Length: 360
Image (cartoon, rainbow, N blue to C red; front, side):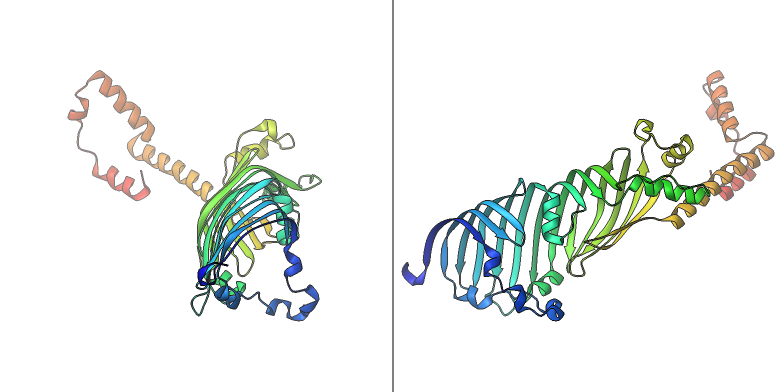
């Protein structure tokens, strides 16, 4: 104990199960579980005057196992900082800086965390009790929020998030099959045979964005699949626990990777941009093809094609040649007479008016 009541320490231990220091699950009525948020221990933080380091070979928390843990602690005048924090987690590494300011009536929690090379399957299993994704994650999370409990802070969160998923699999969803099935429905053809198990491989999924009032919004999501590139925008509502993304798929012309697809399917997909949708709870989001959007784009492409055809036909009937013939004639005249451009007559005003009406 130093002057002013400051407690200094340097502690080491083999293993600690943090869950053992949490309220037992039986103490919370199941019916009231959602109505029992975790409070910030403001009284303890305001009374704590300490500085030191914890070193643990292993720490267990909420189903996650942290190895070779080191935590620096500095607390005084109602302000607690855990920094630096470092640990090995699911074959990867975690580094963090966590601060709680309990010196005011409403406490503030801020975090600056980074993960590198962490395995997704055990992480998602521990956090959401599902095991529908594999791969590794690299990410940074810089967030802050005010509130008396974690639920209130979650709704007040502001900051920035960036992450990258690499060399993974989304289990339970076969994006390629869903695209082929939607096309078959659109073309009134028999649906393709589904592969078992349903899953989608990806080499990379990357996005970043800002968080305002607990809602993460990004407009730069990119997913690289073996023969497909998906881009999109959307939100993740942390307080509500749901996701809503609008995406577009561009199928790359790689027939060697599409052994099950017909030539007609490959031609259709490589010529189109397919609208997709991911929405629902974070634990079990739903994936779907925007059939209405596909139909709308089909109609738009057909209209544009017909518009170009009619424009060329009209120009040919009025002026004795389409735009292409006119350009070729100009080119030949320019070669024969370099001063041809200067000698051109003033354009027919009727031609200008028609072109303005139907577009160049």
